[in-house]
Length: 329
Image 1 (spheres, helix red, strand yellow):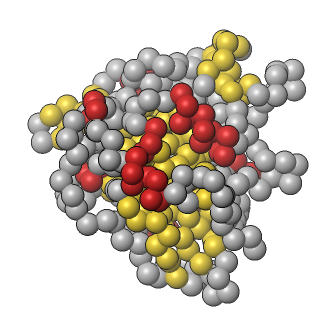
Image 2 (cartoon, rainbow, N blue to C red):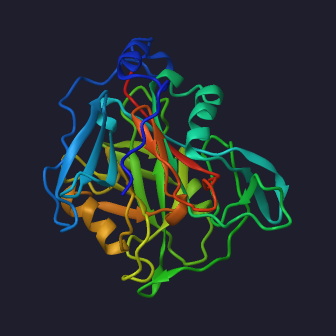
């Protein structure tokens, strides 16, 4: 099995530390320093022999699961919002097509420099990684190869992107299988928050999500800034195995069941069932809420430490949306 790929010439940890000395700008002062989030040592999943901490700095931790012979099986990126880590949802819309919008698609290692060049908030020097995002449909044959229509509606509170209505119904145990992963404003002088919630109806669009407060934290409203849509963590054939991308959230005080101040982003190099992927996050890392994003050949990420490329035998799979992780300044 292939080990994690390392890329020469990518930003080093030392360079990242130097870049993080740049003024915090619109974010204001950095949150108080706190201990880094530790990786677990062992896993409930028999295939995993142990976990190792590959990166642990500036509110971001990268954990990797190994088998007994030293092969990497699973990667989990942890973002500690309380310590100043940030996340964004990124896409590049093209001209309207069909009932929504077409999006430029790239591989994760192409998205990384694109985000650095085109996204100014948070500071480009704090960029840690980009990972494949929402579920989406493949490019139709009569559409330009770089244009992809997303399967679910996406909305950004800052008005950057809006997709057409989606009438696709997904159900799990008689209820809507759709869930959304929302993020509060990354420009806030305080901590950012993540939020996972359900849709009331299987065919519901994103208007309700966009036009209401996500929740409140200690009496202060928290509104959606970026969002992407996925599915119930157990949706699909429970015995089907393929590479997975899951996101989970956790509240550090374990008492708050609204906004969450830590996010966990799982990508796997091996085939996992949906229950196995969910249980890695819930049991090994203690996440409280989880959802599944695009998997299979779409599963990929690129980070300052290296990356996990698409495993599509026909060539690297291009993706139209990424979840972006930033170190604390």
